[in-house]
Image (cartoon, rainbow, N blue to C red; front, side):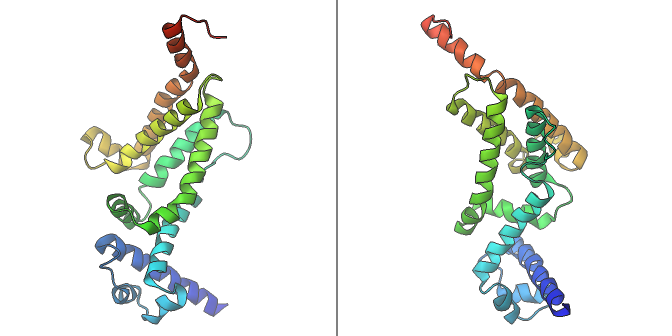
Length: 225
């Protein structure tokens, strides 16, 4: 048991050290020797725990997603007593905190920022499953919230608008006005942003089918059935 515990500790130290160096230098310039030196281990430990530097990088990215999903799951409410509006608010809040949580390791943000500027094939493979889960859950919520007449295209447009608002506060946080950027620096500010996105979005989502019918009526003069 002691050996197993020691092995897990070494593995975690390697992930932490590798994450920091990948974030600082990028995948190409972060060497195995540097990673092991920072982790306080021998070069052979990377081969033992991960096999290759490429597999270590894939596991570092996976660990970032796992950390975010475990702390802020896709479907936070599980008691069955919530409304679609409650579930939508919980989804947006979790989505924002997965990216803006002030308490998460700072290198997570830097490494993901590198990947946004130069996406790797590893990132695309690692993120695909998580992104698909998020997309499926958000579409399910939007279909419950929107009017019955809302089309599949409208649901997808709504989903893109919701995600776009959330990502703005992550991708452009260093370029936005100070009144907004300061909201991303602590939990209270992120909560405030989440509430705004939810209330703003709900008004548009719930009127989707109605707006579609009004446009059709104006064009054809027909009365929706």
